[in-house]
Amino acid sequence: MIDKTCPSAAEAVADIPDGASLAVGGFGLSGNPIALIEALLAQGTRELSVVSNNCGVDDWGLGVLLHARRIRKMTSSYVGENKEFERQFLSGELELELTPQGTLAEKLRAGGSGIAAFYTQTGVGTQVAEGGLPQRYDGSGGIALASPPKDVRTFDVDGAPKQFVLEEAITTDFSLVHALRGDRHGNLVFNKAARNFNPLAAMAGRVCIAQVEELVEPGQIDPDDVHLPGVFVHRMIEVGSGIEKRIERRTVRTEQEA
Image 1 (cartoon, one colour):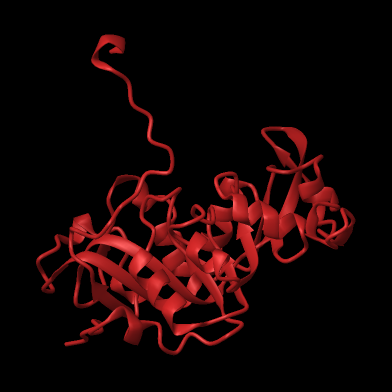
Image 2 (tube, one colour):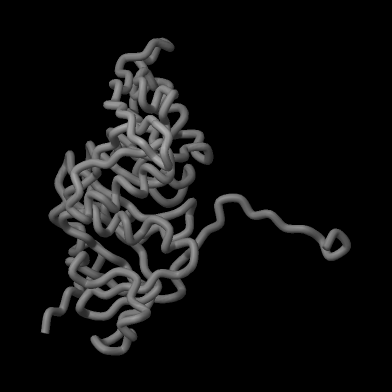
């Protein structure tokens, strides 16, 4: 039997070197693989190039690596909840490749599926396609690095010519993901919003490391319930259902307002 479990988060991430590229799951703070992130922080790994929908908040999720100056480049679709991210980007300390959310999801999925690139209408007529988006500032308000123009082609769709922009797939050295449940073969089940980017990030990593709330034996997960097959997963740790989970922006109302 192939048992992909590791005894600790520290052991699971021990071979991630300085300068590695990572695909990290999470949607907002939902499904952040925080145990693996904190193990990577404790290990001291630097100069990371991270692909994730967002970069956590100032004191949680990927934000802890960012605050410790461990991230060199972020490829994200949303960065609005992190003040330290804004400061590092505008000061020229951090490189950013801003990518439309659906495009980012497909770039990860394509990378995990062996597809080199694809054409999409998203971004046509904007700087996403035409280039010029700031990717790194020089610290004085000037742009040190801008996004390059991308190939745009016209295809006939529904009998009408439409423009599409070429987007290249993403693959990374490692991926870090969080799942609700997993068996020792690496088959994973995700919970609600945590399923948005975690399976895609897992697919894109050449080595996928998963933290699961519940570890079960092979056969205990119905094949119809598997969201990500174990072929994509290489290492696993169990973190328990009591692991801390945060909400980016809690919104509540009083009973009278209901």
